[in-house]
Every structure is written in structure tokens, then in C-alpha cells.
Length: 91
Image 1 (cartoon, helix red, strand yellow):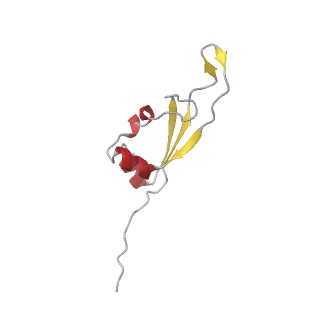
Image 2 (tube, one colour; image 1 turned 90 degrees about the vertical axis):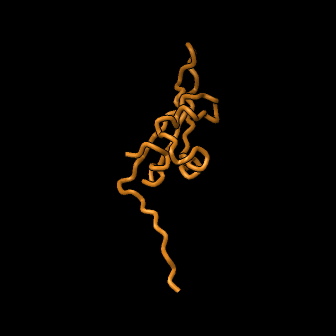
């Protein structure tokens, strides 16, 4: 189980985010926000560093549509980790 975004990237996980504000704003009913997006782990690692904990990811995000800080994160591990190898070219 990965605990940092660097480990999740190495394992080949997919991460998606969605607005979790809901259908109520105080006592009023409002239209539910349907913002969802797949998160690019390479960009996260480049901006936050490999050691950034996955548990703190949702508190650092904001919905681009409504500005809410209520973001739900889905971590989608793959069955087999992706192996990153570099091949040597032989002359």
C-alpha cells in the first residue's frame, strides 16, 4: 500500500478527484456539482515532491468550479505495479 505520491506513481496508480460539496447549501437545495477529473501524478510529484503523503492530498485541493475545499479523492491501485526500466542500446 502506497503512502506517498511518489510510491503511488511508482506503483502505477490512478488518482481522481471530484467536488464533494453536495446538493444543499445551508437550508437551500442547489444543483449538485458534477466536477470530476483524473489527476496527473507526474505533475503532483513535480510540484509537491515524492514524499508528500496521500492522506493530505484532499486538504490541499480546491474545486475549480465552485471554489469548495470539500474534495473527494479516489485512489485506484492497479493489480500489478508498473515496472520502469531503461533499456541499454547495444552498438
